[in-house]
Length: 275
Image (cartoon, rainbow, N blue to C red; front, side, top):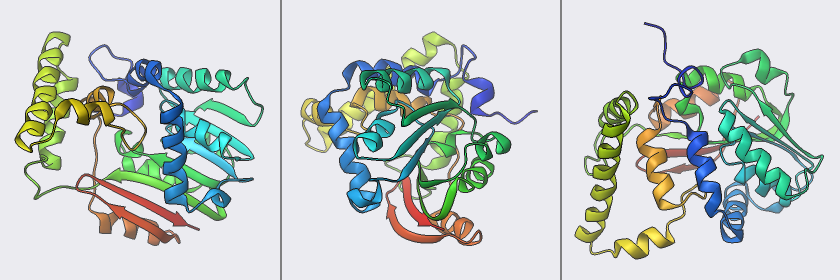
């Protein structure tokens, strides 16, 4: 059976497209979400000097929101890359709202395409948040994208942390089965699965004595997405890969990269490394 990759399946009717979800999400984008995206970049990268006058590439740009943030924070050149046609449309729309600045380029390239990635050149800041674990071949994608980091540059990446013990959140193996089932189900079953999934979070908030309406209204994900689209993004996000933090750090270290900053959550590992 051939390996299932995102680029080979997202156009099929039964598979989830991140880009379609982002395109729908763009209707809700406002100044606050743009500011949150800027704050997120500045906080993890270490201030405005880490972006101003630097070249920046957004691998798996999704909505294009962080590409826009990098541009408005003073990056000398911004490149948005994605394989999903709808994500390309999202980034193009946001660039158009700024008058199509010449410093912002958008290209359709797969992270699994070694030659295509190599043709993009090298950058001061390589950003890829929550993307490469959905390619269907995470380590090959990481190997390709590392080549974008120029000497002295920074790679800011977030990948799924392997969860084997936090049962309340669902283990990684559990979510792998759920996501596979969801993506291979007909449309009417997907609607049922999604309704159950959303109800689970709603009831969970009540159990924790948290007002679900307030939580949903104030929710901003790590990529700026609202609660509803973020939940769709989670259950639909397939292919789905994960790794323990040590394996990720060792992978980079074996290739000559040093860890500058490390952030760990139950389901996510965010790493800033330099060459």
